[in-house]
Image 1 (cartoon, one colour):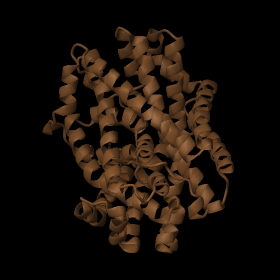
Image 2 (cartoon, helix red, strand yellow):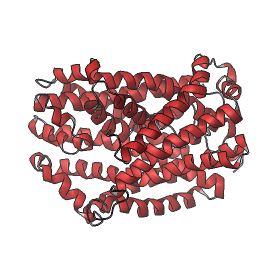
Image 3 (cartoon, helix red, strand yellow):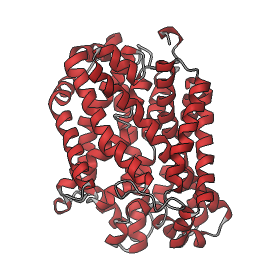
Image 4 (tube, one colour):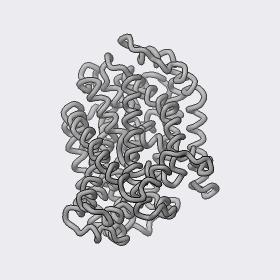
Length: 455
């Protein structure tokens, strides 16, 4: 594809909302609150914010600059900047991550669709039963149907293109998502007994700190900020030269962290109000959203309405992120194989169907089949989030320090006379701390998978 035919965002607002849409997803609304609850509340939040403003900031700037400078998706960008076969593998890892994530992500998106539909059609007390989630997950036909519904929603938007599809959907969905988040957070915080949950979330308690708090916060940041998934390189390639990369990065960080905090405000105080601060409920992990929250909604006045609003918000967030993941894959297909958007979308739909079906049936008909003792969905999550993303981030650090050069990134950020205020921080982080952090995540994740340490 030649540069002049490459799609672009209409301007800064379109780009910021689209990247925020990419970042704000199940990572913020489903994953962040349960990790925050499990790993110490306020101390986890503090560490996460510090990491987002340093490590996260550096990686967003780096990937966006790579994309905008080369006007290519990850594989082409790595090739253009390094002309090195080993570094080319780094480009392919960045490109393959979204292709592996979007199928299982769409399965969880299907669960959200099912819950939203159920809040319209089913009694809230039935949804609150422990068996509601497990019965649905183990029913292969139902799980597969809702996975297909969610996938169809995403593919339709991708089919429409960058400005007409991704940007238009993000412009509508992101403001609606913010309004819904505020409504539910206010309702949750004003429940009797919820104040203890607010304190747990915002007041750092040193006793709650462990080394796993840092490792988990780092891993979550990849997920939350869409780092090392090829998305930011792809979206960066659509950014016009007059847009300030640093200013846009700051806005994405603020938006993304605010939504993660808002999601925690929706969930953690509600758990305290409902259980009186029962630690076992805070440690519910991934089931917090699908089992604990419906119990809370059932105990509230307006439970059905709050349930509908909550799962509508989660669905919006999930769709915008899945769109970004899919767009990254379609862009790679177009750049590397010269495929049209239509053909690329059909191919990714086929991949989603095959890999997603393994994940959606992995708790039902295929429950007896495991990879390294993990169900398919858990295995794909581990492979992408704990192994491939740290490797992809390390490749980006090497690409910039050894091939592209830090000066070239600075030049790209300062295009059009825009200042690069945190230039020294960026140079220090990309050279020294980012590679170190990435290696810590990678080693701890592998040791955890082998059962040597427990996260």
